[in-house]
Image (tube, rainbow, N blue to C red; front, side, top):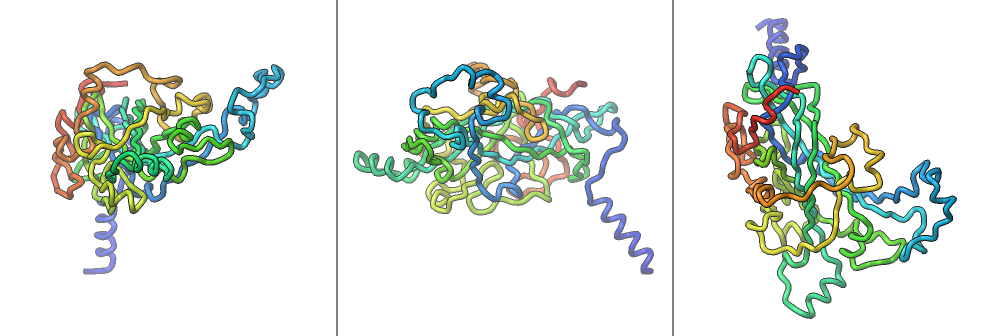
Length: 350
């Protein structure tokens, strides 16, 4: 084969295998009716807990009049300095694939996912002094050495990237973003059983996280693209445990599900979305999708919605998909059944 022909063949193979930008808007679906969700394991390499100051440390807050009012600090805050963290932030990197019907009613990569209900879980190691107290009163199982915290967050109008991903002959929209969980200082102190004014009580205690998602109350697909990183030790498509001891004691199974794990204590403390923090007013769509509602906590769930949230989300047996699954099975299509999040509510124009 001549060198020129060889180069042309290699170029054609490269173009066929690479992502491509759709230049004609009619080739895209405006909104998704098929959604797959998982951790972004390429980004989930370290667990970083970022301390944040309260709103009083932000520029312009004094202009609101608090300083002129000459307020005394509330009880318990007298010794807290300006740089003491009032909140702690954990970012959980996730990935979404989405497709829908374009103007020609053909399946195509989607521009937006209209609404995605994400449930984030944090696995927290109990501090030694708490374990010592509990050990004196009863025998301890491995799971009883940890706390499990849960937060449900609804994201709206999640934008896909401008370049589609080609899988099994289908084009998919792709998005990566962070699910942000905010821990108030009160929660951090209670979990650590440490109430010093300047100490960082929580950063070394968080050992893992998980995130699962539903669309319109139905579990998202567990579809995995061929280019995505496969789960390693302490990982699943939906979770990662960063601490070796915790990974051995809890295992990489679906530890966040009550039906699939031994009992992990779930304390009555708060963790929040950005909408429930002093930082909500400074929210920028550059970093996170829009939270719904944008300010304050979400309305209380009904019993029916709670029932849908306790489904087998995050388990490959929970949703049928003819696409490639996390177990490595191949397939010729990325379309999913109704149980994977297909919904007529979002199969419409914006």
